[in-house]
Image (cartoon, rainbow, N blue to C red; front, side, top):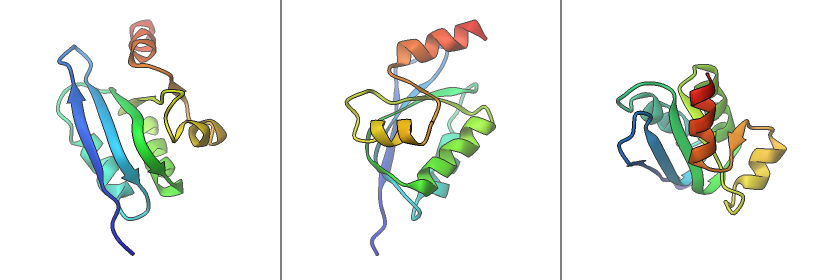
Length: 108
């Protein structure tokens, strides 16, 4: 079995980091993904945009659940994303865009 690949790319330079994930997250790289998000510099939580992912399996959702439990991330998944339906099905707490995620942070 081949290894899946993901990338993380920081968008902008505001007070809260917005990080876009792309590629695939599955059992072969979910732990690496969580560690990479945890190692990002700056304050927590980061806004983690998963809209660029093509695939996210149960190990990926488990990694996201850990990140959410640690207060490390606020999740964004656009309605057009290939993983949007799965995120809804898994009842992953997410926003449709980074602006909505920023508003949540301001209300905290």
